[in-house]
Length: 121
Image 1 (cartoon, rainbow, N blue to C red):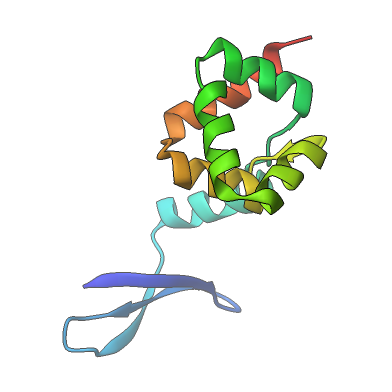
Image 2: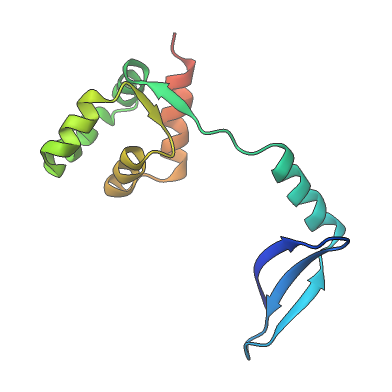
């Protein structure tokens, strides 16, 4: 059985479960699952943002600026314009996500970039 998605019931919290034969059933969430959902609702993960100077400095210090510059230039004029004109970068932005994907960066690299940039004055 696999959980496809969770939903909130009016009295009890339940999850929809679909077995391998495609039969759907509704099952009460465990205490741990309810606590996890409540924590997610209370404290959503903030979207990290950084200004361009700090981002470029962090990329340079981590040895990633050159590969990013090559990737942006290879992506064409619109990518170059967007990179040059953006002053604040949001981790979840289309540009940032496209660069992460295109460069094959994993979560650890992205964390390093934003943590390094966030530590700069």
